[in-house]
Image 1 (cartoon, rainbow, N blue to C red):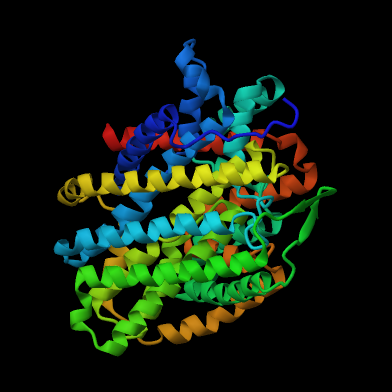
Image 2 (cartoon, rainbow, N blue to C red):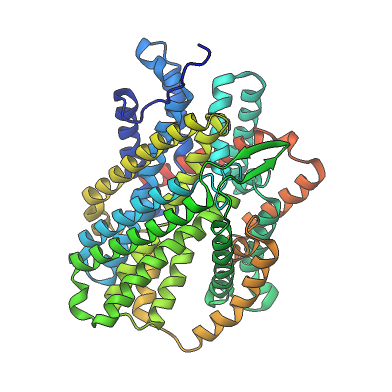
Amino acid sequence: MKGKKRRHERATSPETLVLSLIMAALSAIICMQIIGRIGITPNTSIIGAVVAMALARIPAESMKKFRSLERQNLVQTMTSAGGFAAANCGLLAVGIVYLFGEPDLVIAMLIGSTISTLIGMSFVYSVFDSDLYPGDYPWPPGVATAQAIIAGDEGGKKARRLIEGILAGVIGTHFNLPMAGIGIVFIANIFAMTSLGIGLILRGYSQQIFSMDLGQTYIPHGVMIGAGIVSLIQAILVIQRESSSKTEKREGLARQRTVTPPQVKRNMLLHLGLYILGAIILALISGIFTNMTFGSIVLWTLWSGVSALIAAILVGLAAMHSGWFPGFAITIIFLTLGLFMGFPGLPLALLSGYVASSGPCFADMGYDLKTGWILRGEGKDVEYELEGRKEQVISELIGGIVGMIVVGLFMNMHFELNLLPPVSGVFATTIKAGAEPGIVRQLAVWAIPGAILQGIGGSGRSMGILFATGLLINNPIYGIGVLIAVAVRLIIGTEPMEIREAGLIAGDGLYGFFSALAKTFF
């Protein structure tokens, strides 16, 4: 009826909650297995959406409710939250402490990881659709999931395009082609993706180009530090704007942000306080305060809180522009700086797990909020958008808690079978090795080009952050695919790939998920 207030589906309604809980738990179990055996975690958002869409097509009265796109969005939100929280946060964090040789403290680390994860979810919810993290910016996996849900609902030309993209994504991924990266190029900022592609190629072929392996140096970390510092300055400038009613024009339409700069400033300070409080709780339950001086205690607490906040901000910017979330690479930077601050080994291990847990679900929920933002009409009905966003954060928080409970139930099995994320071993080994002479100088020197590139590109492109992300990841084929896709986009534009690019991302994700599942269990 005209004038009737729209009500969003509830995350806690029985039908939605039961399915979402089951999907979150299964996602957590499977993603823990996959990251332990293969070292990566698939984005299970599309899996949750596909299950909800499939249920909607069962000719039963009880299944009709799943035809609601908002309900499908809530299911996929909790599904991905469970998987990301369990694998990329909980298991990774407890793995660091276990491999460091402190199995008695894995419960304390799990509690600290849970706190950091939930704060990260709350943080992105509080700043989404601000000038810092606009709702109409790329968030590519979120766009892909939304387009898949819409195409599945509407059918016709959109569904055909989606299926074409999915088939191409599956086939290409089978032959080790970076189909998700190609699809993301047609959604994301072209300058950011070009920077990412160049960084990936330079890292992957550094031996041939520079006669040295960049992966064995701290050059990528230095570039990220420089880019990160400038990015933080840019972020501060954004949130210091006085106007609380900034309107941006995109594609000829005026749209007001739902989170104002003053609100962003308050929310960032609030979550900084929460991260510091979480660090204090972690320190108290782990007992590390007994082996540190008062000055070290204060410094460790502040550094843990500040590092967690900055890591979440930087991971969020990278995820928003490119679909990548370099959470582990950024954590290594704060760990390295912590080494030079003179923190003992165990506090560093706990710091690493705490900081590493702040970013992944920030990125994951950013993608899911983007999906919901599109499905809810791209913010045209502000009240409805805010209500839907609130239901999504409830789903995300519940999914995160489910994921951590699953970690608590199954982590001992993973310890016994040595099914732990490889990056957990990297953190533990780095801490044991200690600070090496010359690293600080290398970090300082290479921070300069990172800062310059980030400054040139501006906060809207994050060229420095994405270039550094590429340098930190050894995947040159992905870089080649990205640059080829950039060239194709410049020639043909984005219209021919509309919805097909979402299919490429979905096809890549589906193939990656089920092939990883097969390798893990069979």
